[in-house]
Image 1: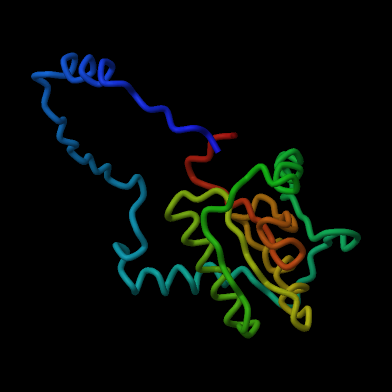
Image 2: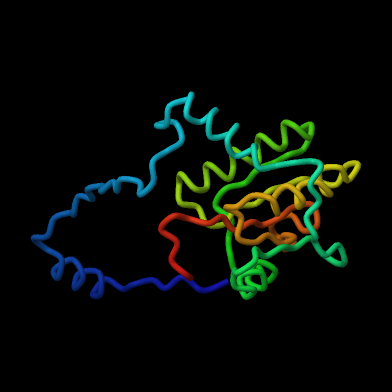
Length: 180
């Protein structure tokens, strides 16, 4: 533990004479407006319609050709494979999180659709979907659904700090997409 330095009377009087005639500064608070609109500002009917529209892309019959060896991963045709590597390393921090624990497959599809719609609406590039382990149903189905959606650029099994093998990090295409 450091020793507490005590000042002698001469130093104290020197300090008081140097600050004589000053007054305390009042701190005024500056509030900055948020850059994005909040979800609550969007009409509830529009949210429901976006959720239904986004879940339209998910089919249980269609089986995309995904590499099932190793962690769940996918990069859209024509997208930069380096984005997948950045996801794997954890270079992207997700801004939105979706927890699918306890949901049925149809509920999970709707929630994933709502997440993708929210990401596009709020200009969120990276999000995290936590599907959990359970009976491995959602763990197996979630990558198959995501690979079908046209707004998904890439996804990869999340690094340990974002859920490990029980979660996926996704990159969602934005209208005003600027390469990072």
